[in-house]
Image (cartoon, rainbow, N blue to C red; front, side, top):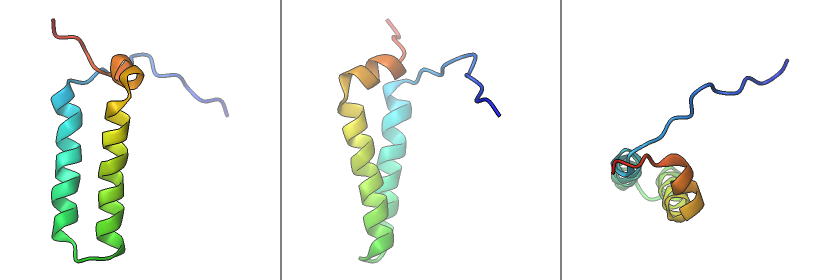
Length: 65
């Protein structure tokens, strides 16, 4: 089976990307200390690091200029 390439690559606004990170952190705070909370926090940290990558942002953020 061959993988299909997407016909249209989705571009996001910065708000569309930061809101899921905020929600993940809020969700993590609702968990008791332990693995569940740690996993949500790690996801939020990974998203933050991804958003700091200028190349990734350039490729995935739309320019609303």
